[in-house]
Every structure is written in structure tokens, then in C-alpha cells.
Length: 126
Image (tube, rainbow, N blue to C red; front, side):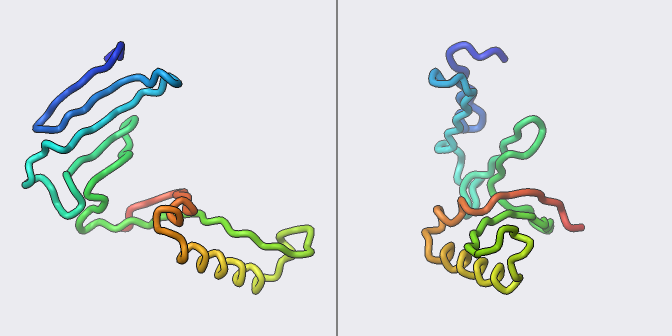
């Protein structure tokens, strides 16, 4: 599909519009689920899955019944010391600094705290 101005498709009450951003040429996909029948919803909203290059990009509901996944995430924290190398920082200082970061994250609004976590890897547990 070559996108000129925009393309729209409606399927079972879901409207999908594909456009190109005039600002930077990015392909924009907008999905309007407002017309999906209530029987296709669960407590998380409409059942929908989005793929990008054959990989699942987004899935709602965001879980798979009976399947479990192990996620590796990064979270950053800082440590101020008089050590030139991070390898010389005592583990007890690292742990205290990490605890302080966790406390700070717990005090933040969830949307702001969520930005501190960087997904790294995921695999299904069999």
C-alpha cells in the first residue's frame, strides 16, 4: 500500500487510519475502537493486537491466560562517592543508593515512575 494522503479501513466497527506526518514523514497509524461491540471488551478495554514487522507491538488485554513471561528490565540510579571507578564502590553503598531510588520511584505518580524502567528482554516460561 502506497500512502498518498491517507488510507482508512473499517472492520467490525474498528476504524484504522494510516497517514504520513507532514512534520517528519513518519507513518502514523490511528485506531479508533469506539465502535467495537461491548461483548468484545474485557476489563482492559477492547481486544486488539498490533504487529510491527511480524512482532507483537501492542496487545490488549496485555496478558495471556495460562502463559507466564520473564521480563528483564533496567532501572537507573546514581551514587555519589569519592571513588574514581564504579567497581570500587562498596556493595552496601550501591544497595543503599538503590533503596533510595526505589523510595523515590514509589513517591512519584505511576506514569512518571514507569518511565524509569527500560525493557531489555523477555521470554516465555514453559
